Image (tube, rainbow, N blue to C red; front, side, top):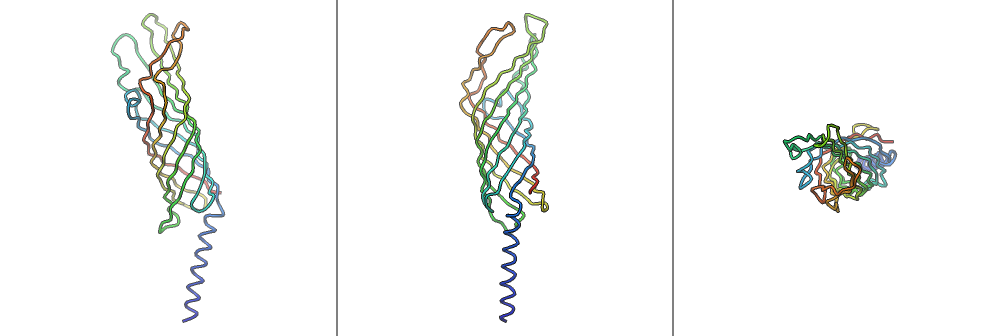
Length: 217
């Protein structure tokens, strides 16, 4: 009986050591992801849903805590509000470039390969709006590019799943929130004169679903 007890104690210890080694020997993750964002609120009146592409990095500080960074580029098309129905024809594109740092907390589950987590990301966003149109007073095509730099935050809920010793699948839901747009941007018209351009919104809110792949080392 004593041997059986010692045998099971040994199995438990070996299992714990193997699990610890599983998480501690490869603490760096680099990867890429693609997501689908849906503009809401006033920004959703002007822009259509579109893809977002990211490069991601993650460093496991412990089995449950990680820090990381990500670079992203979001693409949005024009909504029907730009179909004005008279002489001027518009071709409008929206871009959102981001650089964020994040912290993540991981939860234990019945399967060591399945790692649910919550994260919070904070960083820099550059809003860019490219408007091409045929001027009423000229046959030449005019192009205006509007830019605005802001800080934003992103709560994230997702999970990792370790596919192998080196590859990890990532899926998450996130909500990007960018505040404090003034409503107007100073730009130049076709004659080079400054004028105030009305944005039509004072914040950007973007719910998103995203999937990605990490390489662990």
